[in-house]
Length: 392
Image 1 (cartoon, rainbow, N blue to C red):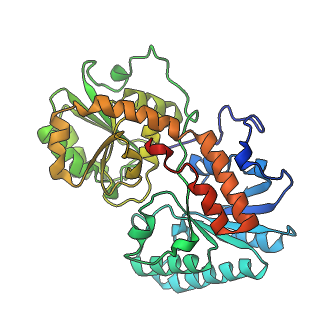
Image 2: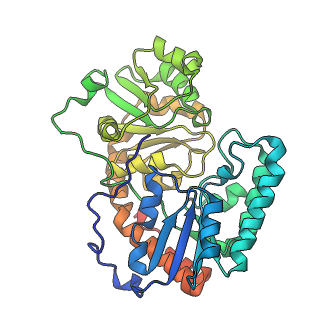
Image 3: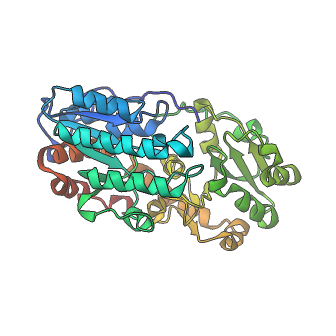
């Protein structure tokens, strides 16, 4: 989806940092992160308050660019913050894998050689699709060994990764994925959203928003939906698809079912809010994911969630903000009887407040500042303060 680069309503200095998080305003470190995914709001949410804690932040398209900036920097304290590691092998032939992995190892050593600190945010266990497992594991073992701090969002991260590589708990700091409040243009409350998307006015609506990819399990969910859903329940899938999508089973199901709507196009900013407002619940049927921005987006809009247990970020539903199913055999009971939506809506409203991006950005900045000054153990203590608030 297209997400423009801005944080609405957040002017520098407009939010007072709570006393427990106050740090010196002079620059304490220079942080270089990679890859910088322009248009992805996650990184904006993460770094929104770093300047207020004395951390200057600069994004780089490539890891090589970030490493070069660090090795050339005259700053006393420098940090390399890495995100998605699939870029290391992207667009390379299998014959080039050894060279790419060796280059990555050398880059990590170069940062250490100039006294730099290294942080890795674990977005997924392994790349979702299109990458060989063995070289991807080797890359992750390199970063785990080199990292001074490993930032996780899901409490399941260490356990889920253990099948492929070990993450020492002594390096782990958990910080929640912030909500997307204020990022998307709001739709007029007078707009007939159901008519806009071709759905009967009396219908209940499930929505799945984001790229249509095999690992997301949309086909398996849609197949059960087409057979067992309440007749007044509609399922709308919106997101960019592959070129051959019209040959897929999901497309065939959509052609045969009047209650299944698929819009295989890139979703613009102006459409995100309308889709979320339209939804009575959001479906996250992912079959192999660690963290789910789509689930956080749903809770941002206070929408109940129906998620597969493998969908990622399902710990955010612990307060009842949705239902978690183990596999497709569990689905009919939730699709045939929608009584669970009312209580889930109340819990989702509570979670929307708990995921407020301003408060989480303040806390994240404080944690990174503490890491820079006093190390991972000290950072983890701040991160653990009030960490249970999402389940209150």
